[in-house]
Image (cartoon, rainbow, N blue to C red):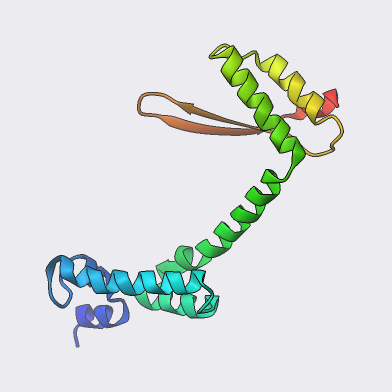
Length: 155
């Protein structure tokens, strides 16, 4: 058996995707993708455990499947944090404050006034405050995240 045949026996997906799999063309992708989706749905529905999904992912994609079988852990943590944020009174106040400043002030938002309002809302907490700013221009997007150290001074 040559190296290509051995590689396809271990990792069938690259050959299915590039059209060199059985059946040729795009038709070779469909059964692999359908099987993959069935495994993802089985994982979401808890009819298979994480270990079995990890083994399946590794057999399908090889060692590069790490991101795939750890993605569920990341999504689970994200959902827990979003749920906690949705139930947090301070987050609701901060969202309302953001909407107020954004809708009433337009593009000329006074960042000092906004920071003072944020400091007032968070005056009873000892949590660190982070500023997240998204900037988009024609073809560039940037995300800036910084700790607002001066907020703790105003508390």
